[in-house]
Image (cartoon, rainbow, N blue to C red):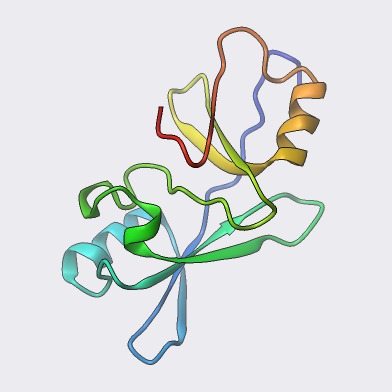
Length: 131
């Protein structure tokens, strides 16, 4: 990647726990939105999302109740989730394509920053902030 090219992470995969507590998935954000509209997923449903997706190590999953990671049911699977439990602080960045990517741990963001990927007017934010 050149210093003007931002890293492009793979599509995030989502899971949820069904009525029996079994993990269902993986699903895309669009699939999860459909399940929310159909009532398969509710505000109290436990959802899991892959974090730290990279080619050099296995992805980990963060599990939270739907209402705890999105500011409202309408924002679920439309906006980026607020995830901070795995590995401490998590970050998002806004790509040149106006798509928000993340969350990524401090260590991954630092690697990309040191490699010159975050130059100019690239917006970044903590996962706990929606500003």
